Amino acid sequence: MRTYQKGKPSAASALRPLAAAELQKRVREAREELLQLRLRQATGAVENSARFRFLRADIARCLTVLKAQATAAK
Image (cartoon, rainbow, N blue to C red; front, side, top):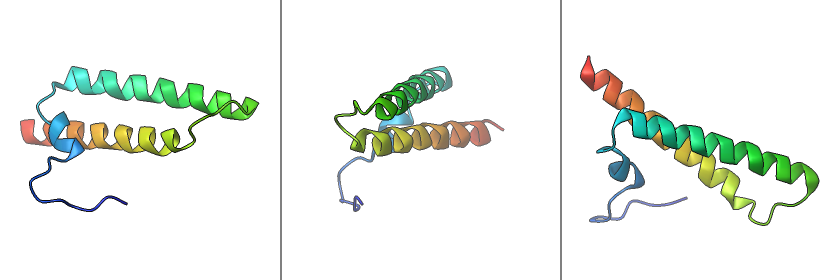
């Protein structure tokens, strides 16, 4: 688990300036990559199993920023 480091920008702070369409595109691409990775796992051809966790976290980060933008717009 990553710990907070003062002065170091978070991954979410890099996503906040992006437009909603760009965030939705990133979510869609990450979900497609996750599906492909799951299919490769079924055949036993996955080299980097840590990629699963990274993709799930990235999807969650993008969705969190999207939700924050939606509630801020109301």
